[in-house]
Amino acid sequence: MSTSHRSTERFAAGHSAAVQTPLPQGESHLLLNNLRKHFGGQEVLKGISLAIPAGQFVAIVGHSGCGKSTLLRLLAGLEHSSAGSVRAYGEPLATQQQQSRLMFQDDRLLPWKTVLENVGLGLQGDWQEQARAVLTEVGLAHRADAWPSQLSGGQRQRVALARALIHRPRLLLLDEPLGALDALTRLDMQKLIERLWLQHQFTVVLVTHDVAEAVQLADRVIVLEQGRVGLDLPILLGRPREASCTAAATLEQRILQQILAQQAPEPVIRPSHSGVRWAL
Amino acid sequence: MSTLSVATPLRLRWQRPLTHLRRWLAPWALPLALLIGWQLAVELGWLSTRVLPAPSAVIVAGWQLTVSGELLTHLLISTQRALLGLLIGGSIGLALGLLCGLSRRSEILLDSSIQMLRTIPHLALIPLVILWFGIDEAAKVFLVALGTLFPIYLNTLHGIRSLDPGLIEMARNYGLSGWPLFRQVILPGALPSILVGLRFSLGLMWLTLIVSETISASSGIGYLAMNAREFLQTDVVVLTIVLYALLGKLADSTARLLERRWLRWHPVYLKEHQG
Ligand SMILES: Nc1ncnc2c1ncn2[C@@H]1O[C@H](COP(=O)(O)OP(=O)(O)OP(=O)(O)O)[C@@H](O)[C@H]1O
Ligand SMILES: [Mg+2]
Image (cartoon, rainbow over all chains, first blue to last red; front, side, top):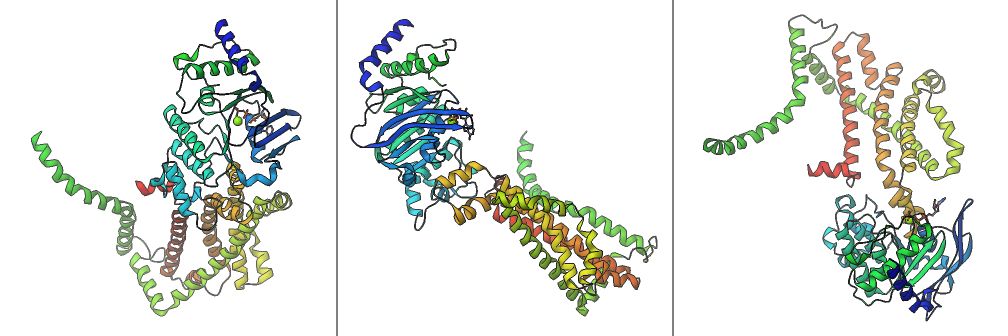
């Protein structure tokens, strides 16, 4: 235990310049400056400052209730910050609303619209062709005329993904979109999201409970701790990534230690080289 | 074993249309038996025609009234009153329901007053309505409108209230607001509940009409019944009762048809479609 602890420390130390919030290099897509949010007397986000470069895949992990969804909803413009600011490409976020799309944990498809109509929601003019094309991208072109209630959970999530992608967003916000899926479907969806991200080059902020998923997909993992950034770790692994390689396992360890140290429950950690997936 | 395997396909081939036929006939068996029993009871003199005319007499009465054109006139007038009342009451109920459902301020302002009015049985207003409108057309239409207003109001409000806020949030995030949001998200989401309200209203529509036509009218099915009673024409009285039953059934079937069309997407109807 202690040796692995030291080794992750060493790993982190090797990238210490990048472990702290990296300075924006090139074009910064999102700039969060001392962002705060409270609901009544409860302070949920206690000053978050981040710079997210365009095209980066950011994963946010943390304990339940630490404010992940709140942060995402702020970025989506569904909530207003209590203090601080978010800028997107140097502009106030409100002017950039149409550039971002949020995908919720539940699919939130309209049950009274067909799959195709759901994908085309909010579009005008000749959207059918486009909707079919996006459905093809997520592999559901053959279910275009089905009702949402006739699809499986994973298929519904893919429709929701298609609905987000049809707007060609520059920022895709994902709030535990795979939380309700079984392990195999999850893997498929992860591959799909990575492929589409590589293809379309949008910026992604993914909230997840699954540390392995975060390491698997993201360029950068941010651990939220009671409304603050507890760890900001770059994931410098090549793509395509193999699941459960040693480097990934080491990074997972490092993130888990950070998360678990905070509430310090009984250490039930076992090394994840065995391919065990860590979920919080 | 071998005999079974030969016999089964044969039996199946015969059984299938038979079970189908049986399924079709089963619901009608009891009413048919009753009718035959009734006819027999009258023919054998167990039942006085003063109490109940034979079914055949009712059919004859119906035929005579149809030929004279009287039946159609009264039927049309009654239907017209019912539908006009429903149209007025339903529109007001729908409009109020939407208003209170969509705007918190209107709900605070209106809902408790409407709920208070709702608790008054609308038929209790008959004396007052007669004072206001006499025994005019307006009196009946007003009563029907009043009766059909509240179920639609309540169910529209409930439908909007119980909409999944997540869906509305999603739609807003996807750029919908105003009329498109209402048309594509709020109205279809509230529709199942609104249609439940419509079915309640249809029931109340006939009930109200029967009562108000029986009390004061110079035309319509209710008038036909009351007129026949004065001349002791039990066959016509029974005929009008049968007519009301048929009209009620027709209204209910129409509502079901609408549900099937508009709620095609609903899991309940999808299953029905498959099964
Ligand atoms: N609309 C709200 N009103 C009041 N409190 C809220 C509201 N939304 C969130 N909170 C509070 O903010 C805190 C953070 O909530 P949030 O949904 O961001 O957590 P989370 O990190 O996404 O948790 P989970 O992983 O369980 O989804 C919680 O304590 C929650 O009670
Ligand atoms: Mg959450």
